Length: 168
Image (tube, rainbow, N blue to C red; front, top):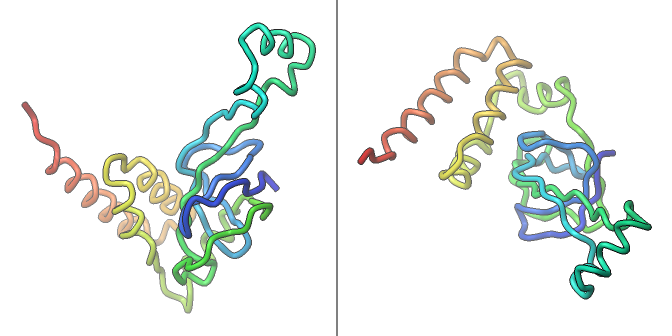
């Protein structure tokens, strides 16, 4: 386990208190496959009500309490059977890392390679395609026989992104 859901933002987005994750990591929450979109440090609730001197005092005597928690915002990609995630995870659900073998098996349903969530993910990440890039790069590593196809998809995404950039 690498974390627990602490906030549900929508049916396709949630936040989890995590231990050790990075942006672009693929995680499993129940039967929902999700990608870590961002990671930030959230200060403890009590800090909102204390002055700076009180916070310093707490940091000095109880550093572990004053540290706050590491939170990851996750975007739901699909269910493990590649269906759309129509429901959100529940608060308290655990996050687990997704192994390369599991990710490979999920994308090879009925013997054919599929990424049905790619277009919705691209739509959500229009301004920053680094999430899409990191996902495609990981898929290239674990599914080398589809590398050519994935390289073409990535090149097309980057080309369309560059077309949209205006140079002044």
